[in-house]
Length: 83
Image (cartoon, rainbow, N blue to C red; front, side, top):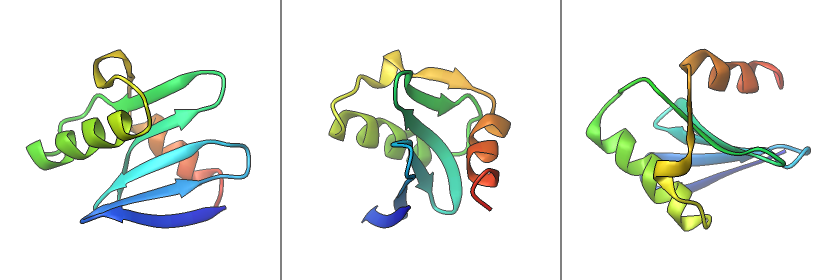
């Protein structure tokens, strides 16, 4: 597991299984899951958080509009699994 700040108020957590989770401020808002692709929260937090999500997905070679929108609870469950 590797935690890395990647920009102002943006942090990513890389898990040992290859999953990478994006945090905007302290909230998990997107992830890249091996064999599945990108997921992003369907919940609206702020314009800044939406920019964080798009910037992160594009920086990793993805297309923000192709990310699957999921309930916020799914992203939170990814984090809960490592606690």
